[in-house]
Image 1 (cartoon, one colour):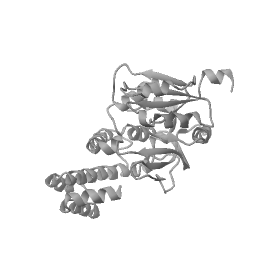
Image 2: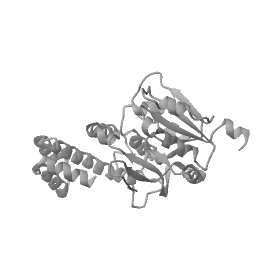
Image 3: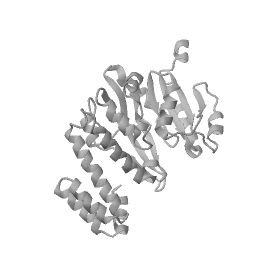
Image 4: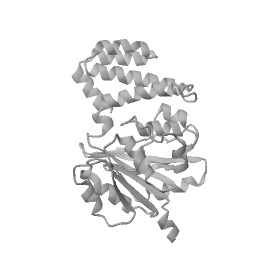
Length: 305
């Protein structure tokens, strides 16, 4: 590696942390074990009160850069703040409770030889800490190319797997939208896919840890609220709003809302929502959700998920 490479890292790894001491060492170790070495890691401490800073600062490597947030901010605002402090031509993201396989960066960077590729992603493993099992996230072929329609229909882009070209990130204003705390990476990838190719590695390059405290799981209501807010915003987007897959996505969100309200016992709300949902089968699913006792419904939802 030349001295120039050492001054200018090719990849900036963004790691945002807020009280993530439990799994932090495993995440950091997986970065240090990467076969590709020309990287920097921006550790954005969002005012943690645990031993996160102590653990991070115990590592002796000039590529590891610790930054303490001047104020605590929502997650995706914090991601943008960390990106602003980075220098790499490419951006990768790893949260403190996930980890990478050793050749992750090396495999994915090779696909940026195509200058139209703005983002590279891959499959990954789910690690269920509660049940002690692991399994591959996506059994189907992951799409490559201009995939806006594909990921509107079936979103398969895991944040822990993506590497994005910095110039592509900078074109997607405002990067990660700070109004979101849960779906910011989904929103970012959808907007990026309007103008850039995606490339996919079919094999897993990372592990996503499911421990019951993941934001999307622990704050289901907020996840739904953000999806509905996103739909309203995208209705103003002339490219996305015209897609058939976007209309199908709206239908999916309405269906999710109906099931969620039925689980809470708000059956009248769920019933009214039937008029917003197209398709006889979808309507039947909601009716079943309304009729079933909440305990059985919650059990079935857990089994499906």
